[in-house]
Length: 435
Ligand SMILES: Cc1ncc(COP(=O)(O)O)c(C=O)c1O
Image 1 (tube, helix red, strand yellow):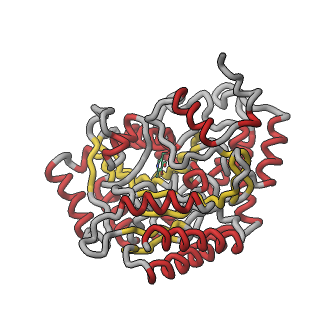
Image 2: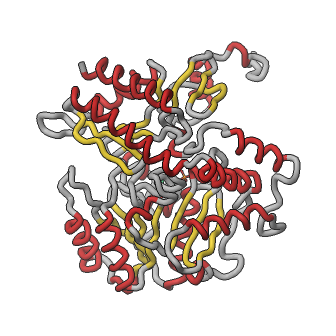
Image 3: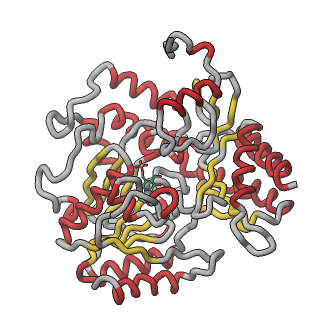
């Protein structure tokens, strides 16, 4: 007889839940750690067996304000007692308008802004492209190698990494092209990257038919490569020259992660459109497109929307996130925390030459593992490191085209004590796997 999962919850272990998950759910939706969470608070999680972990993954960049920030939980509880869903296109509610006002104010540059909401990052990117196409009446889009923009068909087309994201799912929407993303470590200069955009104009599509260039100011999934500011500034000039919409995908780098509300602010560039999601609402699903009002108004009424788009629970959570950032001065904290993480990683790198580079912007910090002899990606070692750290109570995530980069997305609200404890585990795990 089948067991009733609700009745047997007390006997759950990670192994029994893993077996049920494997039987009931497809393997295509992966799972980094074979751990099932029972509860979480700020930068700590406890699994169903009562084990405690320090969370350096933050639900993949969603928890800049930590798990269950009390202020956010209170606001959502209050909203639960008022209204949870109407569909904003049917009956509207103030918190979403207020959120738009805040995001418009927080977006860089002097031109008037408007914001539109959906539920996931991929949806925000899809809609940014729709808006850019409606505004320019052009079709082409240029994205960058290694970039990640989501798992829907259009955003997979924009994503610059085949395995595991794109393999087997094509064909993809047409008129998407990939330029190179600069990386000093891998010998791609800003000039090389800009030349690759010019090659696209020469080889693939004339600039007069390009609607948008979409770029992550810091590549997230792609490996925490920071776009040099002169690169972003040159892209801005190029977009202006050809009437192309500049889209900054800030879904991973935004919401205060890098020490400014948006990572693009470090460059002084005003993008035309910005996509945000993840940490925007501290664990509740909402995504935004914010941009120049004249561009945002290009689609006709009814052209944008979604049943759950801008859910009221997520809207009040996002409003609290903005307040928490101000009250707890989390932008300044992101810079301090990033410096502390970088120093800790550099200390480990001193003992382990397999760490080819420690890099980051604010609290978006990573280390890339390369075989010292030939600079080949040390993917197997990275996997062992991530597993060993989890065994010792630290949740890590890898990233990059070869999954040989360890990224840290610990909540900005984590105390120095938790941070140092996590870095201590990272160092011990490194010593254990790299000898
Ligand atoms: C830069 C970037 N864009 C888009 C996405 C897609 O967001 P979602 O998974 O919410 O659809 C992600 C997710 O990792 C991302 O990092």
